[in-house]
Amino acid sequence: MLESLLLEQTRTILLLVDPQSQTICEASGPTLRLLGYQREELLGRPITDIECALSDMFYWAEVQQGGQIEVNDTESSYLCANGEILPALKTVRRVLADDTAWLAIRAEPLAARKSAETELASITSRLRATLEATADGVLLVDRDGNIMNLNRSFSTMWGLPDAVLASRDDLEVFDFMANRFSDPVAYQQQFAAFQPDSDLESFDTLSLADGRIFERKSKPARDGEQIIGRVFSFSDVTERNAIEKQLLNQNLYLEEIVKQRTAALTQQLADLTEAKKRLEEAQSQLLQSEKLASIGQLAAGVAHELNNPIGFVNSNLGTLSGYVDSLLAIDAAYTAVQQHLSPTLPQAFESVTVLKAQADHAFMVEDLRQLIKESRDGLDRVKTIVRDLKDFARVGATEWLWADVHKGIDSTLNIVWNELKYKARVEREFGQLPEINCIPSQLNQVFMNLLVNAAHAIEKQGVIRVRSGCDDKQVWVEVIDDGAGIAPEILTRIFDPFFTTKPLGKGTGLGLSLAWGIVQRHQGRIEVQSELGKGSTFRVTLPIDAQPVNPPAHSTTSAPPRST
Image (cartoon, rainbow, N blue to C red; front, side, top):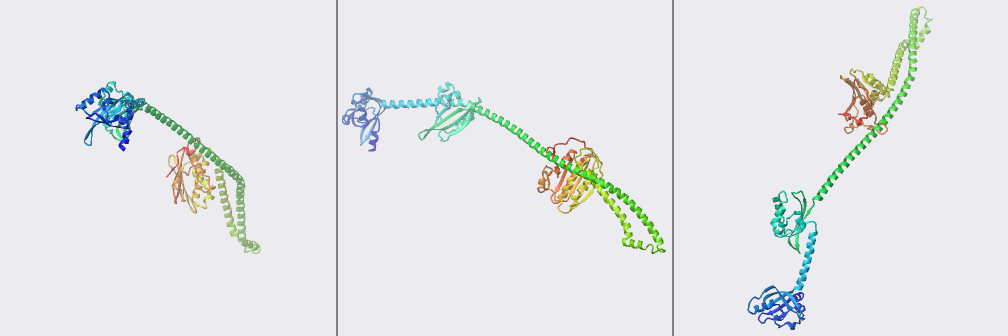
C-alpha cells in the first residue's frame, strides 16, 4: 500500500514489460497521466507501439535477439494518446518476481529534467554572481583538500596568473600562494594543519611578504548535515590596519597632549594652592606680627610709664638711704653720749631708755639697713624686667645688628618666667658664644616660642634645660624638656602653619611656623628630636655672620626641617 502511494507521487514513466512478448504488463498511475492512456489501453500492448524513437526500435530488436537488456539514461520517445511525442531518458533493468524475468522501464521526461536543470543552472548562476560580488576571496576545498571552487576576488588578491588558473593544478595554486610569504614552508605546514572535514571554525591573520595583511576565516561546507569540505574566506585588511594604526597613534598623541595639559593644569592648580596657602600664612603672620607689634607698643608704653616712677623711687630711695645713714650716725652718737652720762644722770635718760626698749631699738637699726638694701634689690629687679620688656617690645624691628644671644635668652626667660615657674625648673648650660649678626627681637620671639612650648609639654613638674655652643662659623641653642614628647607620625608636620596638637582655642598653630620662618631668614635651621614619654630637644643653629636677605617664601617652598 505504501509502495503504491510512493509510486503515485513520482513524475516518471514506470512500465513493466515481458521480455519475450515485449508487451506491457503493468503501468504506474503517473505513466497513464503523462501519456494520456487508460490502463486497459496499455496493458497487453506491444511496447514498440508507444516507444517510437529509432533507438528504441534498435534496442527492442536487440532484446528480441537475446542481446543487451539493461541500459542507462538512453534517449527515448513515447507516443502519447493525443498523438504528441514525449522525449525522455530511459533506464531499463531486468528484475525477477516469482522466478519470472521482467523488464522494468523508468523514463524521465526531458522537459521536467530540463526544467530542473534550468532551475539548477539559475540557482548556480545566482550563487556564482553572489560569490563573485563579494570583496572577500573565497576558496572551497573538498574533504580531501582539493579545490572545488574559488572566486575572482580570490585570484585577484593572491595575484594568481591565468596560466596557473588554466592549469587547474591544485598543487600549483597552493605553491603560488605559499610563495607570497617570507617563509613559504611555514605557510604550507600551517595550511596543511587544517582538517577539511573538521566541524570547527577558525580565524587568523596572515602577513604577506609584500606588506599586505589578510584575515583568514574558515568554516565547514555542508550538504545538509554532511560535511563536504571547507570554505576559506580571505579579507585584505591592509588599509584598515593602517588606518587603525594611524588612529591608534593619533589617540596616543592626543592622550599624551591631554596628559601634558592635565599635568600642566595640575601643576598650575598646585601652584595656585601653594600660593593661596602662602598668602594665608603671610596674612596670618602679618596678623600675628601686628598683634605682637601692638603688644610691643603697649609693653613699650608701660615700660616707659614705669620708668618715670622707678626713676624717682630710685632717686628717693637713694636720698632716703643717705638720710637713714645720717640719722643712724646721729643715733649712734646720741647712744654713745647716753652710755657716758647715764650713770650720773639716770633720771635724764630714763624715758629714752624705755622708748628704745619698747621699739627694740637695736633690731630696728639693723633691720632698717636691710630694708634699704632689699628695696634697692627689688627696684633693680623691676628695672631689669622693664628693660627686658622694652627689648622684647621691639618684635617688629627689622634692623640687623651684632647682638649677644645669651642676653636675648635671659631677657626672654624674664618675660616668660611666669609661664615657666609653675611647671619647670630652668637650667642654663651656656657656652662661650660670640656676638652674631641678627635681628635680636625676632630671635627672642623664637626662644620665647620654644620655651613656652617646652613648658606646655610638661604636665606637672619638670626641667627645661637651655644649652648653647658654637664652632668657627655658627652658634647653636638647644631647648630641652622632659615632657610628653611628640608622636613620630606628626613630627614632620609640627612646623606646618596652623598645625597644633593643643585643644581648640588653646593654640593658633603659628608659633613654630613663625619660628621656622625667622630662623630661615637668618640662614639657619631648626632640628628636632623627640621620644614619646621622654621629652623633646629643639636645636636652633645660626650662622655667626648672617647676611641680610629679602624674606624668603615660607618653608613650604623650601627644604623641610630635619627631624630625627
